[in-house]
Amino acid sequence: MPIAKCVGCVEALLVGCVLLAGCRSPSGMVIAPRARAVSQPVAVNEVQDAAVWIHPTEPARSLLVVTNEKRGMEVHNLSGLLLKHVDAGVQPCYVDVIYGFRLDGESEDLVLASCMAPGFAGVRVWRINSATCKIEDVTAGPAIQVFAGQAPVGLCSYHSLKTGKHYFFVTLRDGPVEQHELFETPEGRVSARLVRKFALGGEVKSCIADDEYGVVYVAEDDVGVWRFPAEPDAEPQGKCVIRVGENGLVPNVKGPAIYCASDGRGYLLVVSQGSKGAYTCTKVYERSGDYRFLLTIDPSPAGFGALDHSSGLAVTNQPTVAQFSQGVLAINDQINPNASEDFKLYSWSDIARMGGLLIDTTWSPRSKQAWH
Image: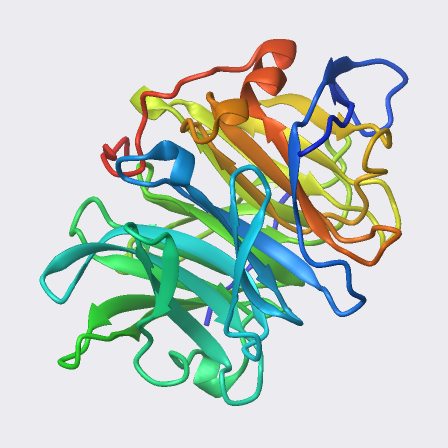
């Protein structure tokens, strides 16, 4: 198993800032996040990650799917309202959405989550019912086994535009990464087979794949963001493309997330978490090339309070509800006075206009194009 080493290493208004450098700069451009996705205010919440699912015909019915390690999968609408809890005992950690998986002869959208509970350690899969906007378990067995039965931490999905096959990547804290190919079982359920494995040298959790560029990004807490080729037959030779210590990026590095736009444009967003209780901000880089640093999203403590110890991001260019008609950015906030961890939802148009970023609602996750 090769080990990579870095060389050269929103229901109410909340005021925030988009800055050109590190967190807590004295000046910046004001943005106004417009909603938040809130779990029930009890002390057992442990919200970790989220993914946005875009409804195929009615954008306002799109969903924010959130992992709550203590209470299961949470389904929210894009106004932040909690609609449903699912599978409270599986301890989900990271989550992603797949579009267009062939299941029982139909094209289905799926939710995948890494799960850590005894008896459910592995990856679980749910089908999204677009008519009811509910998620329904389609996992073959209690969970898809990974890491020889160990509980995974990070997870992201990958759709190969070269072969049409669907995959997921999972991580362990101490560096190992596995890639699995998803398939339908004879019973009409979803399972997967191991196709590749590699490892990083330090602590890793989160990852994200870019289907159009055929790469997967893995965040190493104390080092930065690594890029690997995502096709299973490629050599897993990684390159550290975003480094801790540059442009105000500090450990622990989390996220990442991709704002996709047409013609291969867009942005790579990365959480600069810091130590627990420290101030968290989000760094924005170009999506490809040299990953040029562009700006920092740095919310102020007004309104809902400071955004502390964020671990997860979700972003989409697609219109959803009226207040997010040109995309939305959801950022996890793990420390709140009422013990209710949440996701704060920011209008992408507010961020983009103040920060000089692209607004493009024409790109669709259902019609991707290869750029590699």
